[in-house]
Length: 292
Ligand SMILES: Nc1ncnc2c1ncn2[C@@H]1O[C@H](COP(=O)(O)OP(=O)(O)OP(=O)(O)O)[C@@H](O)[C@H]1O
Image (cartoon, rainbow, N blue to C red; front, side, top):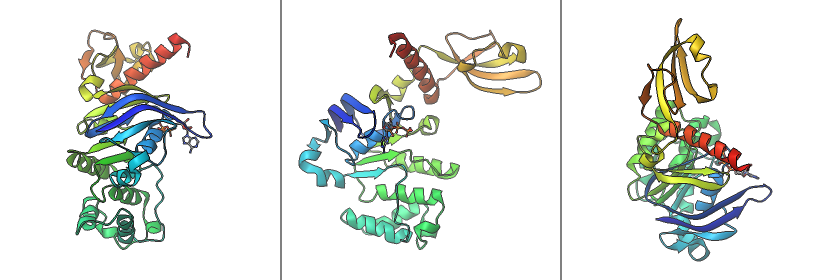
């Protein structure tokens, strides 16, 4: 269990403060979501002990960084965005080198990781010659060296092609048992079938933390889909439209609303991403109401 108590971090050279009074993150996959600049990367840096809070602490199964930093670090796999790899090294050599820094790999572990991340064809290639998606797979693979119980991933799907995204999400899900995995992402629907909880940050504060079912429940707006003609479509509030497909006569529309805009519209299941849009809309209305 990962527990945050009275956490405050003022980012240097930025007008940004992360403030989380109390949070307990259980094992499984937690999706960390929020707008650009909300503080997702900042929180992951703190969880990964790449930064330290100004106040409060983070407990890793009861241990804190002020007393057990080397041990805690040995229990963490971290992939920040824009991770820099040693350009001149070959893939396999780099993984061996990183494993050495982490205290060594189990026999066969690196081969298994290279297989899982489809890196075998690139094992003898220098990093600098590899495309971005392969480099990202190396960055992701290194987080699993030593099979750490805490994994923190900052926008891990970046640069991966569609097939590799799915393979990676499947890999994470298969390895989430008894592991606390926090994934910052803007791709909620891709993770939907595989994850356990959502943590929503806004302006450095946690606005929601709970299960996927809780995330899509008790929302002020529903999701509707139906067909209307072009004239009526232009009367809809564009801010409510999620997508629209058109043929010569009709527009097939998916939108947010309290009620259907026309009788032929039917209520749809709310996806994680729909819920995100609804919650962001309510939050901006709340901020406008309070004049913040
Ligand atoms: N290296 C940095 N130096 C100074 N300020 C930074 C730095 N990185 C982030 N910030 C600032 O810290 C705040 C939080 O940024 P952070 O990167 O944690 O947000 P985020 O939720 O991860 O955003 P995104 O979705 O765009 O990655 C923002 O105001 C940002 O401008």
